[in-house]
Length: 401
Image (cartoon, rainbow, N blue to C red; front, side, top):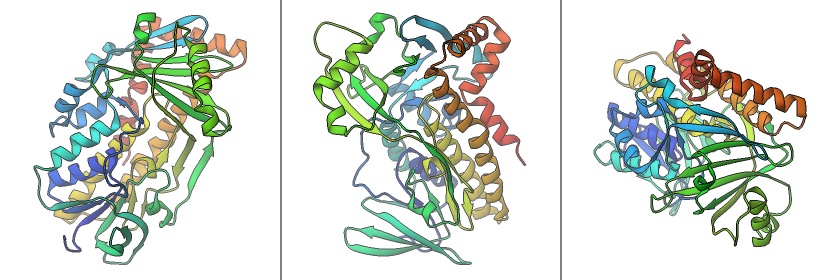
């Protein structure tokens, strides 16, 4: 076991693994604690935006992601009944990024890539089946109570980074609130091998409808040949009822009728929230990723935003560790990342959902006209895509002193 002079990381999802790799590359010792016994492969985030690809370039992670993922150069806004409203070409961002596209790659595959990269570094340990249940701190460090197969243990560290998701135990141990709201409807995700490209769909589609909006996108899938995910709003009916085969088939056939049933590979349902922690720092306890902010998945921003947290925070922890920098740097981390979570992440994802579920015909028509005007105007299109590709938000974060 490592001694007390290390950083504890709670949660081994993509943000936890990214934090681990970033610290390892700096030479900062750490222990990564994960409640599960493995990397879970349930369908979650699957979009990698340009700034994230740039950040991972030096570590070689981007090159591996590119080998495993799908490059997507455009996305559609559609009307469920009327078809394509606007096609957004990410190639117009070639003047500001080396990666003017989205990369579609499931988050569990990114976690595997990051874990594999960590094998090249020493000075750390990864402990599965170690669930942080409570954290306390004093002037010298933190003490984490951890459930393990051998019973409760207490681990010491200089700091702890909570990357342990929306129900973060690290956050619950801090003197912070998790402000925001929960949507009244849940989100139903269905995955199928059926190829929707034959009907003219792009690899990423946001489909507006006043009764049942949806989102459709393509990820590599288990064999790398392509798996389509469809996201629908769902009622508060029991999951067993929503997952009934007849109900699933009726819903997906209502979206895109075809002869014969769809082969459904995965089905999942979850609550959706829009929340931001009132602070990402309480002394030596810190938050990143979903532990700090959660949002609806429309736009594919949540995981990327958490990864950006990781890079920002690891750099500052490295300066504290090796250069004796003031802990005030961690307040700067909070200001930079929490500000843009509120100004960009929350605003953009809330707006994305509101636009595609718009029930008022006049408002929906105005939204469509706006999309068409953006696509028709190169300056407007460039500005819009800077925001949609998360470049504008990152610039704003880095500008905060």
